Length: 263
Length: 159
Image (tube, rainbow over all chains, first blue to last red; front, side, top):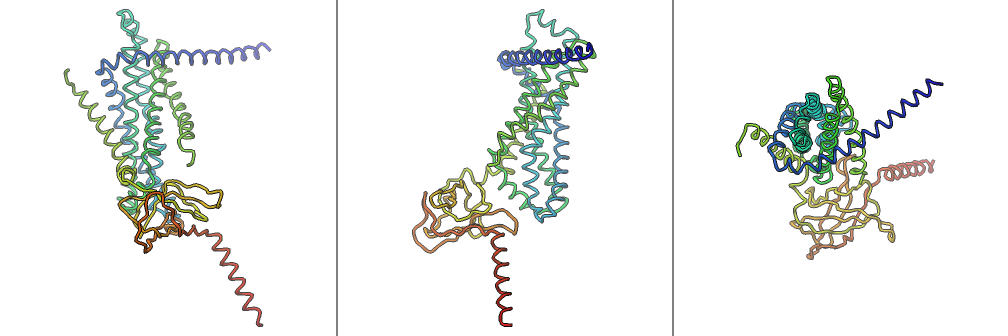
């Protein structure tokens, strides 16, 4: 009986703790937005964050985009060939990249490459009491540290997703047209006939912006909220990757349901 | 404001991003080709449109001259009404006929325009009079089987 009560109590504590954290996270997010005016006035801070979140993620994004596109080209060709419609390879590669894989895989890579770095950095700043020192000097750490990172990452994310899609389509082109020998004209013209700028490309960009906001907000909050110990920072980093990956996939379902309801 | 190598990298990054979006818009999407060109809208009614979809191509002599903009159902005539956006560069006579064709055996469906002989040209809002709906494969097979069995019974009778 006592055991049962204890476990019930544990569940309740977990739920209340979760809701509490949710509230703190929301307040933290709103505070970041409120304080971002200052960071736009000192734009070099944002530039530096675009460098560390965006430019340093370029290699992994470009290489994995190329490989994802090449795999799509190979697999798509295998399947389409059985229906004798291998000319539709361009449509398959471009639509799946622009609508889904580009934003989602780029955001997943971004979460594990840049999101974890943001969490670890801010967590360590907190553990070594750099944030407290800033407060001592009447510098708001949210305005000086958090907001520039937020905007730097949010600006980088759509750029990275677009680069991922473009690289993927080039990869599909390399495998499909150059290696296997699908007709080049049909590859591009069918792609152009099927991909719509507003319906497909712009919706993909919107997706990547939403993912960027979600990943960055989670990463910043986990770092800011991390217990100031070595173990706490490591746990917070893990949690950033797990939570933001789940958030990306869940948000992707919701956004897809809104955007492509089968016109 | 002093310049740093960091700014250069961020500049390259942003330019590459813009280039990627432009590549997607112009090379992958249909931004460059048709949307910006001026069009005029023509209506046509079909008894059956088969698998025709909005944004399907409209071809004349195999050349894409426009796109289907809207598909609706006319509940008075029980017919499908298809709005077609044609490029203003291409003019067609008033008695042009429209038929729904399939590219390849299982390919996508498109509308083929066959020019008539009249001097007057189609203008915005015109209604195409002569149309031919999609050929439904099941009906065709049904007809074929029906004809075949009828033929067999006829050859069997004289005996």
